[in-house]
Image: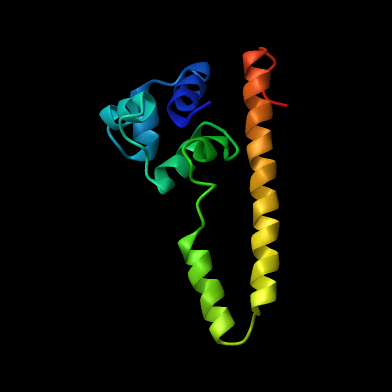
Length: 124
């Protein structure tokens, strides 16, 4: 399920109006409407707040594509540590491989949640 559809489903299942969600994010209800129609993608920070507010455990941010993007701050910190000699390229490679495995696990979880929702069983 894509971000807009998942957002609308979670919001309506929990009986929140677009205005209530907007107030929790500090945006307008028009912004929430645009997130739900897919006309606008929420910023990463808003997607994370949506996850917290709707108890989505990261599924919503992932559905909007944020967990699959490398975090620039982490990359910059790793580069700085490598330049200082505090981490090696091999250590960075290992972290990258572990991150890829974690991402694959998150994506598999999303698929499982979507299947369960289609089958009417909820998340497990």
